[in-house]
Image (cartoon, rainbow, N blue to C red; front, side, top):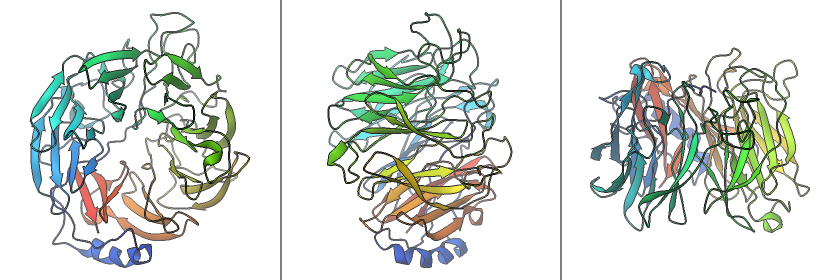
Amino acid sequence: MKPTTRPTSKFPSQVPNSKLSTSKPSKLLTSVPSAKSSTSSKPTRSPTGNSGASYLVNMNVAFIGDESGTFYAVNIQDGSIVWTKELGYLTNSGCNDLPDGQFGVGSTAVFDRTAGVVYAMGGVGVFFALSMRDGNTIWSIASVVDPAILRNYGALNLYRNVIYLTFASYCDIGNYQGKVVTISLTSRKVTHSFTPANGPAGTGYYGGGVWGAGGVSIGFGLRNNSIYFATGNLKNGPSESSNYCDKPVQLNANDLSLINTSPDLSTLVGDDDFGATPVFFNKYGAAEKSGCSKQLLAVERKDGRLLILDANTLQVLQTFQMMTPTSNGQFVSSPAWDPDSSMLIVSLPRDLQYTLSFIHGVVGFKLRSDCSLIKVWNTAVGQSNSGDGNYVFSPPVIAGPVGKRVVFVGTGFWNSLHALSLLDGTLLWSVNLDGYASSAAVFGAATVVNGTVLVGGWDYGTTGRILYAFR
């Protein structure tokens, strides 16, 4: 399985001075004209270029890496760079997923605010623990994987003093084995690993990459201490779904021992495995407002199917064919869950042609007490990607107070950011980021913090990356 080309976000050089408050959705629309017409606050491009990882924010500082191997701390109030740290990159001329074949910091970092440490994976196989204050290396682990073979595509996740990392190859090239790896922050060592290509059908097979941009999903709540992820296909085994490949997988969070895998799924197109991270939701079962008694998992498959699974058995409970199947894997995002409204939100880059029961844009599902989902709205944004090109939308993000929450979605190569009402899908405002750059694609999920919406843009006209801030 080759990952969909989707460079995510980049550090900001300047921040547009647009006024936006997520606590007052009725005023969001009035901020858009000033955001679109503000030329004096136009952001500049990265001097290093190449695609960057998604970002995370601690108070007023955003942390982000780029594919040239530089990791940044940026003040989101004025766009100034607080510090930088070089984490390394490799060049792989055989993989054209990224400009210039540079592979550096390609995943979202994670931090421990109490300890004052941000954890990041560099491009040369080294794991870093950095001071959030000044970027100095506190400790590091070399050779977590062989960086000539494996690449960290998925976000780092921190749970119970353990970091979870996921790995796949460059463009699905070569004889590689995808992995999930844990690092103990207590011992400061790699403690466990899981290889999906090894299993009942034997060992020595290749493939099984873990491509999802969210890394693993942590399962917690009632009687659950699991991690979840979805895998790419096996390359040379009895079938593409042999062992623990081409399916959602549940592992024990403590030692990465296998708990469950989903049943094999039918094939709709040639390249139909998983390039997305599952979302664990309704975590407290019957105690949730939905009334549904099950813990659930939602995952997008590259062939356009949204699967809803029982998180404790990995049995498929419901399937939605949401878009026309393609061979290039446009359906590789992750849904967003809001427990207060029992809403699951999905971004959709392509119509379900012929029936049009789903159209490109954003879809809102409601979870009912019988644990089934029903579509309650579907709002068109961007354009439908009618061909087999590598077009994806960003994962949806939900923010704001109960009853007035807002969904933020970027439209990939259609270069726009949209805000919609969570409850009914009403389009509140849209911004075309071409107003700030020559070609500003939006692939990375937005972040909302302290009344500021951060969104990454990839200026593919000049290979510059920009992080925008709207208030």
